[in-house]
Figure 1 (tube, rainbow over the protein chains, first blue to last red):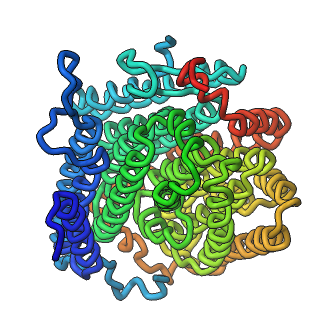
Figure 2: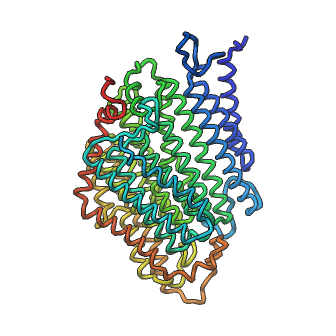
Figure 3: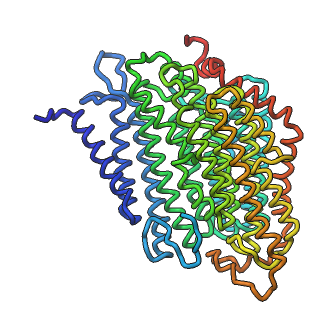
Length: 122
Length: 517
């Protein structure tokens, strides 16, 4: 019987996303590699979110009038930063990959050996 | 609070957008503003270095939020030295780029250049681990743009690899930071140092995982074997003057290793004792050797110098991996030397490739062949660490510092054999380029310019006589010579810096105030 706690859900989500991401970044073509990078960043975002411990129904602010539970706001700020950065980075890599695809006419991730590149060490 | 401390970050952050938004259609204005900004940066970092050389550690609290809660910038001897090195290098590269017309071959060079400087300088100044991540991203996203500057198929393909590799590094960085935060509840470096020291040994498994992941991230930046694969292809395919600026980027990785593993996971910390050194030392030695072999086997100018840069990173990290004050002193001296030497050689490589293409083959004599040959051999001597240029002093310091280490014979053997192989590789390339060319007649010309997939290359050959590129090269050469002549004061400064790094109490007190234990 699997314990269906929120910890289990989050942990398995991080694990699945990371595993799928690593599988995809090992592919030969740029498109799956970029998808893999996106999955990895989703995984790391959830992971970061969980580093402040998982709390349900708790606000991320201290309440000085009542002694109520609160959750750590810092990881949420970190995740926001990470989301913005990874979003921008994904856009950049898509554009560069598109440029490479349009000028080379293929989207292999490794650099093909052109005839004039004989002797190029790998 | 000294607001001057944030000036080297704010200045390029303001000039960059200004160049994009106001003067982007005027090449001359872009050049003027970019150059003025870099000159000002040199002035600012000179003042900061003078302030830091007294040994006082200055702290700048952003938004006046006090230390463990807000982000802090910290100026100590190490950061001041690195900021000064960055701005001097930036000025020289900027002069070269303007002189050689590289900035005309694509859009927005100068704006990206400013953002790049902002990221690098911020990474050197910040005292917050997450902020270090943010500045890494700033410098990376600018470097993506600079790397593919002026385009071309191979450059785009190398660019994709470079971006993907670094995005993976960033993801790993976030995992490492998350782990550290989960264990310690803080990301301020000084606060981390305090908290980490208090963690009991039986609860430290997660912390040690975080520490090793962080080391891996910085090793990617510093191009340590087996995480160096991004470097040769991206540096060799980037515009070579840009690669000269990137010579400081691998040093950002080395700086981060030095900072985190003296301050937070210091050599005296029982939990992670010997952890960084034990892994880093063999990796650094192999890096050195692979770099030297790569120099010997390179068929292209860019790759030749890129592998030369890997060799110097190997030497540098060997010295850091000793984690002794002597080792760090040697590493700091060698950092300055190898940054200048690698940048110098990248610029000379660009002088060569602009004249006869990227292959190292014998071709008819190029214009100014004699002068470039002298520059190339001086640079090769410097990078390989032969007398009389500062490299051999740096290597001597490294060898001397390794005397007490268990692996002393391995270290000495690798460094000395590595130098020999490097000088062989450089000599092979140099004699092919500059001496063999005299025995070739004009009829054997093959259209080497085609290798450069640059669309704008037709304009380049007319500007060969420009003097500014040579001014930039000689400026770097002067720096190297000065580093040799003033080796005494330079190594005294490095010694004082190392002493400051190995007494992190002062840093922690400066950031967190007197109240902490």
